[in-house]
Length: 112
Length: 115
Image (cartoon, rainbow over all chains, first blue to last red; front, side):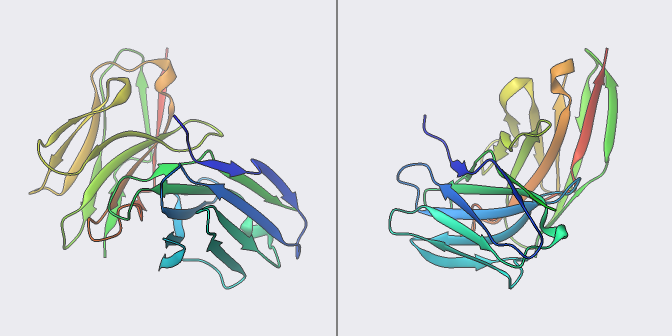
């Protein structure tokens, strides 16, 4: 069965650079969630989209932005990267907001 | 607001011994409850979930959990663990109010199975 695809799997950036993470949800899933998991930490909810509209917002820095496109894939844009942004970024998708979310394998971002 | 507390940050156990990973939650509304497993450098894999119905939930890899509403707990159990169960385990809650995928995670429990 198709799963949530995240790209790239690994990304190394320098401080103050910009990064774009992509998430391709399971076909026919219309809801996407982004999470950030710092080293040794639990995943923290960043933001979610339902039918291409932002549906909820968590602890997402102002330097980050995200959107969901017409084909339901989502991109997380991160600017002015800081060392503390180094983390594993997960995307999850679900069919409708009330159903179980399935997680991708994550993108490991390292800021040097 | 919801919160999740995993009562043990690390649980060492010998192979073939039983294990229980404890999870308590706090919420003023009905919740969905989940257990996820994360192997080193891997993503999150759903072990089991409680949405409604029977309070005893069986999941993959021989794990099960029991929802206890009065004690607001959702402890994970396995009668006999294997070396391959060594991983980080996360308990999570979401509310069935249009937020099915917005999960609040506990701090995680590192299960270490020794031979």
